[in-house]
Amino acid sequence: MKSWKRKIGNSIQLPAESAFTPEKSKAWLEANSLSGSERTRQRYAQERLDMKRARQAERREIEQMPHVFQEMPRRVEGDQTSTRSFGLVQAVITGLVLAWLAHHWLG
Image (cartoon, rainbow, N blue to C red; front, side):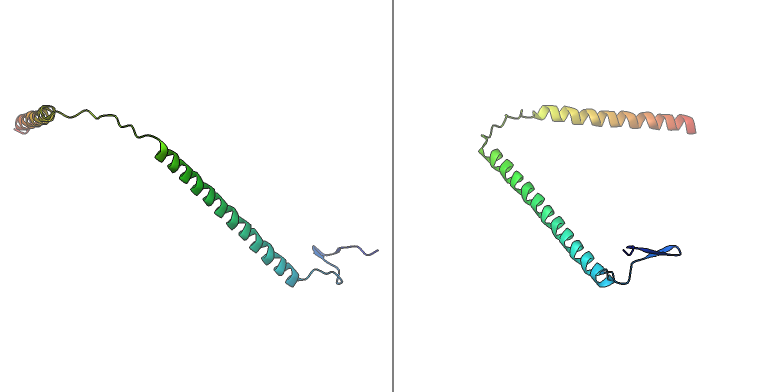
């Protein structure tokens, strides 16, 4: 019986009567890479479809729920005015203090 492989130096060569050819190898690689990418594409499409269906189901659930809004407390105009005036007074006092410090430190 012939050995399947012959070793010549550091390289291994297949016997001459082998059915393995570079053309067959190239065709096999192309077929497998195409089928692999097709499977990947189908799996991605299925995942997207599942996500879309889940979002639609969630949207339907939200639409069927009764809408209950809590009443927001109304703002009183006096509150806004006092907050604004406090900020203005604070800014004026800070400015005066900084001006006084600069006058005394810089001479």
